[in-house]
Picture 1 (cartoon, rainbow, N blue to C red):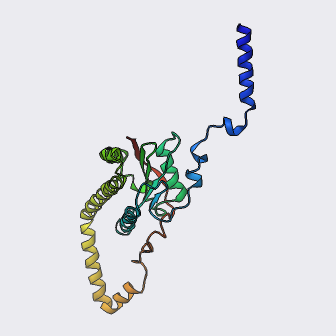
Picture 2: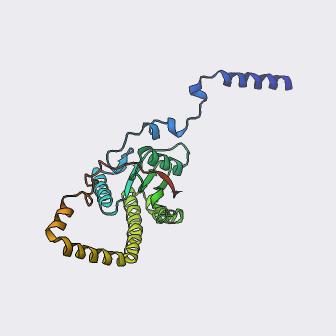
Picture 3: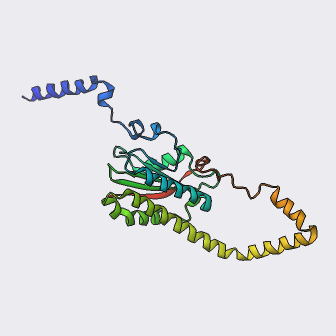
Length: 240
């Protein structure tokens, strides 16, 4: 009887070895149909590859995120996919941000919000430049606060609340920095008045309006998203 079981196990192992690779292989996230390598390069901030958002909701979120980039110089990209085959959502979100270079080069001011409804997982990952403001603990707190809305499948409200929370944090930090730098602004105003006194108002106006130092090259909607930002600044993930 023991010899029979040994032979049976031997033939079973031999059979597995002879199976075609397509049957034996455990697919990884990079090889699934709807994953990192096969996702098209984003053309808008909100990328719903599942179809859980209405056209109106996508339009509203897109307009909001484009305006946020103009006002706060932060690039937030939303990605919604079906599943990640039990892979780590934080790893996937970070790789998406790095692959598409979300954020400006040198500033690393990109954010990826990855939503996976079928797996009931979510992740917020940030570029290095935002690490001082959006720590892992803060990102985790944001996610914990929106879990009740995810359980109700209210995905638009979920994304809207995440975006609002992120911008409130960044805006509060900007206000703090602005208050600390008020003295520098006063000195700058005094310096400009002194220049006007030396060179005259017309010469100063020519300098200001015929140079591009104040020109914002990012005011063309989504075209310049993904300017070379680096990811790995941290973030958090969760499930519901």
